[in-house]
Image 1: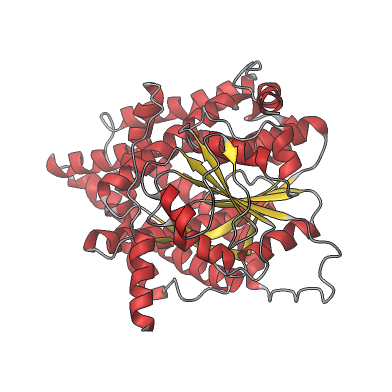
Image 2: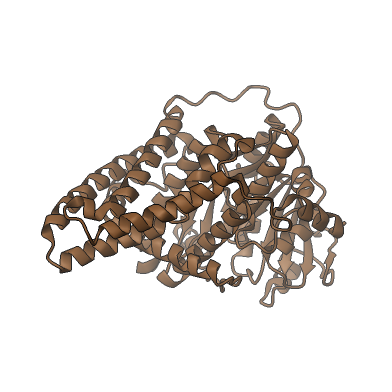
Length: 488
C-alpha cells in the first residue's frame, strides 16, 4: 500500500518528470524580474517621485489586489443564509490525524478539544513522528494507549475508543501524515497540528461541508494566532491576528474566483480518496499542504473532475504562532522557500489556459509574489538612501504616496475585520481600534520583518536547504493556563 501511494505521487507530481514550460510561463516569471531591474535602475538616473518607481510598482500591485479582494468578498456583507432545516442526508465519516513530534506540552490541549467536539470524529490517530520527549508516557498514562512498537498502529484507547497511536521513526510531518492516511479508514480526514485548539463545532462544520458538496476535496478552517504573553509575544500576536484576518478574507475572494490554492495544514479537511489518488503529502516539499493543493488542482483539471477547494467560516480554531523575531523569521523563511519550491515545480501551470482561472489569474499573481518582498525591501532601502543623501525633492512626494497607501490599507483593514466578523461570527479576537493601529504601524515594522523572512526564504531556496529548525510552541499552553486561572 505504501508503494501504491509513492507510485501515485510519481504519476501526479511534476517534480519527478517536469513537463515543458510554456512560453507564457517563462515570459511572466522573467517579466516580473526584468521589471524590477528596470525600475530599480531608474532610481539612479531620475528625479522626483518617478525615481522611486520600484516602490510605486509595489504600491500599485498591492492596491490592485486589495481592490480585487474587496470586490470579490463583498458578498459577505449580505445577511448569511439560514441553514437548511433538513441538513445533509448523510454525513461522511470523519477521521483526524494529529502529527506530533515532541509535542507533549501541548498535545493534551489539542486532544481535549477533539474529545469535546459536538460531532465526535470516528477516528483520531496520533501520528507520533519519533518523539523523544514525554509523548509516549503521556499517551500511555493519560489516554490509556499501549505502545504498539515502531511502525505499528495501537489498539483503541481503553478510555477513548476513537483514539489510536501510530508510532513512527522520525521522518518529518509529511511522512507521518502519509502513514496515518494509510492507517485511517474514514471517508474524510482532518489534519490538525498538535499545537492547535479546535472550537467545539469545528468537526461538525467540516463534515457538513463535505456532506453538502460532493466535489469538495479540500477545505480550510479559520485560524486565530496565539503567542506567549510576553511583550514580544503580544507584539507579534497583534500584527499576526490582523494579518490572518486579511489572509482569510483574501482566500475567500480567491475561492469565489475558483482559484484557491492556500490552505493551512494546521487545520484542514480532505476527501481521503482524492488525496490517495494523487499520492498523499510530498515529503520533499517544505510546505506539504500548499503543494498538495496544486497537485489536487492539476489532477482535477487533467481528468476533468471539477474538484473544489474551499475555506469555511464556520470551522474555527486557535493555533500557536511565533512570538519572537527569531522564530517568526524562521517560520516565514520556510513558508517562502516552500512557496518558491512549489512555484518552480508547477511553473507549467502559470498562464496555461488548461487550468482556467487558476492558470490565467492566480498563478500569474503568484509569479509576481515571488519578487514582491524584493520590491518592498528595495523600495524601503531606496527611500532611506534618498533621505540620507538629502534628496528631499524625491523623499517628500514619496512620503505622500506612502501616506496615501496607509490610508488605503487602513480602509481595507477595517473592511476586512467587518467582513470577518460577519462571516465567522467571531468578535472576540478582533478590534477595530487595534486594526487601525496595525494599519498605521505595520509598513514600518511588521511588513519589513515579513519581507525579510521572505528574502531569507529566497536564500534558503537557492541554496537548496531543506531543514528549517525547531519551533518553540508556548503560546497556546500559556493562554490555556491563563484561562484556567481566570475561571477558578
